[in-house]
Amino acid sequence: MVIKNIAVLPGDGIGPEIMAEAIKVLDVVQKKYEVTFNFNSAPVGGAAWDKFQDHLPKETLQICQEADAILFGSVGGPVSEQHLTKWRGVEVNSLLGLRKKFGLYANLRPAKLYPALAFASPLRKDIAKKGFDILVIRELTGGIYFGQPKGREGKGEDESAYDTMIYMRKEIKKIAHVAFKTAEKRKKKVTSIDKANVLTTMVFWREVVKEVAKEYSDVEYEPMYVDNAAMQLIRNPKQFDVLLCGNMFGDILSDEAAAISGSLGMLPSASLADGTFGMYEPGGGSAPDIAGSGIANPIAQILSAAMMLKYSLAMNDAARSIEKAVEDVLNDGYRTIDIWQEGMKKVCTKEIGDLIAENI
Ligand code: NAD
Image (cartoon, rainbow, N blue to C red; front, side, top):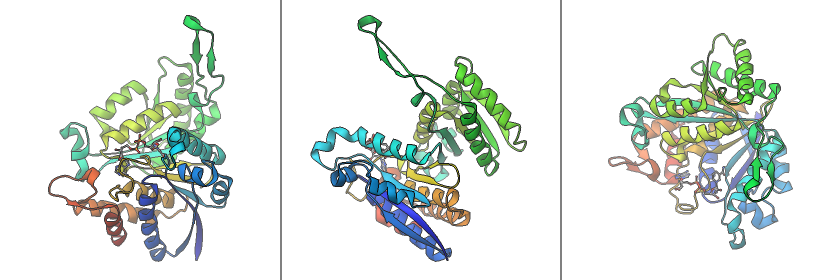
């Protein structure tokens, strides 16, 4: 029997509620596919602060270090009153801390518009009806967010602030290979996003990606300026398969791709290190406005578990069975409130988790 260690970090707000449904689904998977999952839970974010006065305590890091993968919920208080002002800080400290510690350099964010959910998309009806299935691959540990020097200097009208956009050849090559290898298993197209008409860093980005593209003759390669890509996502998202982006452009375009697919509660993500280690989390945050009411949509968390099976645990069939169960439940008309419309069957967090688990 194969044994896999999974670090479970539910976090704050709706995190524990939607995590419970993902674990329910993984429990079915372990019975069906000869594998044992050791789930080791640990606090993170506000929940960890309340216990250890630390957003990312060493006890939690230890559990992550011993795991094959991390399944992460969401962070962002309030857990205790004095902590209220630190919401954003919680997110930055625990998420960036984990990315740095485990070298999670490749962020994969699928944005899929299921035909059954076309009504929930803000896109024009005729465009939404066609659906889309995009994977944004964002470089996560370099670029302008981390480039040095950055700072502020001077005073009054002469005061200025600056950041540095910098990429090394090896960083671009590494993320480009992830994009092309992933595209080989999808619709075989990589659109590389840059701003090569203005930024020297992006001229270099385009040159290096073009070189890498030559190694993947079965994958179509297309460079695109980021401003055009932002527009094309609204006008014709179906043209895209894999969108390869640096850190900043990926941050922005992955949110746009998420927005046009309807609900935050539907979108999983993966952050991968070298080898098979990765961290998997839903696209949304801790949703304090609905936490505790049992109505959150757990699908993003459940699909994050499916990504974990695919990318970290080499369990493609099991991953596909979760994805199919989600599609079946949606096609049967079951919906949490965020994706509900007249005529559909309204269900709560636990009920939709049960239905997905039963469908595996
Ligand atoms: P949010 O994503 O938590 O919520 C935005 C809106 O989407 C809310 O109306 C919420 O109810 C809804 N929503 C989100 N997930 C949902 C789900 N699964 N089902 C149904 N509805 C869902 O973003 P926010 O309100 O800007 O931030 C709230 C807190 O979350 C903040 O503390 C923020 O820092 C944190 N945050 C954490 C992460 C993370 O852990 N990765 C990401 C974003 C925000």
